[in-house]
Image 1 (cartoon, one colour):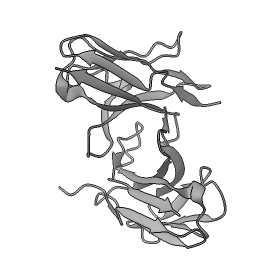
Image 2 (cartoon, chains in turn orange, purple):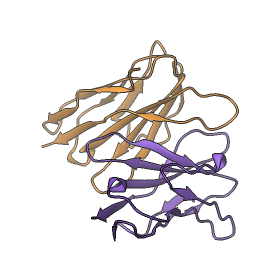
Image 3 (tube, chains in turn green, cyan):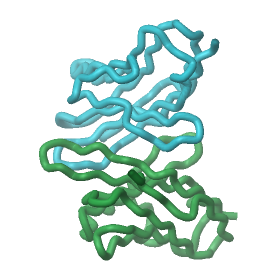
Amino acid sequence: GAGVSQSPRYKVAKRGQDVALRCDPISGHVSLFWYQQALGQGPEFLTYFQNEAQLDKSGLPSDRFFAERPEGSVSTLKIQRTQQEDSAVYLCASSLALLALTDTQYFGPGTRLTVL
Amino acid sequence: AQRVTQPEKLLSVFKGAPVELKCNYSYSGSPELFWYVQYSRQRLQLLLRHISRESIKGFTADLNKGETSFHLKKPFAQEEDSAMYYCALSGRGTDKLIFGTGTRLQVFP
């Protein structure tokens, strides 16, 4: 079946522009995560949704970052007034969120954002 | 502080040699530990998790709570094992993953 998809795969923005990154999770997956991966680093947690509820946004680096999942399926990560330090790969992951154990997260291919 | 440390950025071995990718963690409580792998031009995927105690593609990892380590081992490396490996942890009651910086494994023929 189809995995997690993300679009666009590559985005180049001028400093100060707003960008929107989209994530389509696996159908039926309740939980959705966003991670930021800078060059040479591991992924870092940004935010987490369970259905449409944003349960944890502790990883968002500033108020320029905003995420939503209004219908509990597709999610959008928006970055306002982009800065060069925002350049990174943005990863989306989804999981079934079974209650018993931490569930396996399935990752998308990522969106590579370059801010000039 | 919650942290995952992978001390080696690059590990190079010849085919058939044993492999050990090191992972140490810092967490107050009982975390769940994972190894994720990213092959060239593929997405990040789960390799194994400590709670299932499985051997996947010949890899094993034992959680050592005394040394707060979760090293990944394989007795005989194969060329197709060449990839980026990330150790990660998750706290009980939270699903978010905390990743290490990753180790690139190169297996030469």
